[in-house]
Length: 64
Image (cartoon, rainbow, N blue to C red; front, side, top):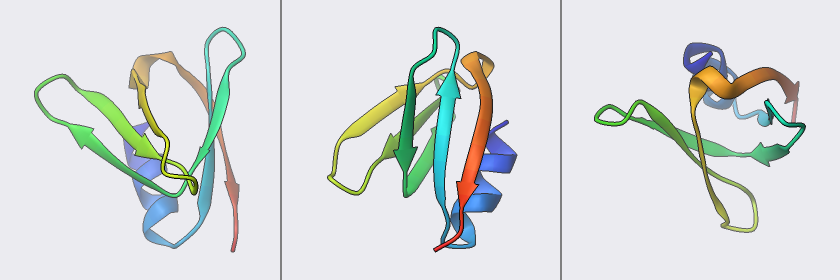
């Protein structure tokens, strides 16, 4: 799932990540922490999110 998120963000898109449990967040930047394998993401307001790639159910891409 990380590859799809990274590819969408590199094309200057916004990505909404939906995780198990029904939560979601829209991000404009993200990175993968190689030690923990967790996605570190930041939204337009500067809030930081941490997500386990195995908990991501699907992503939505919004073209800017």
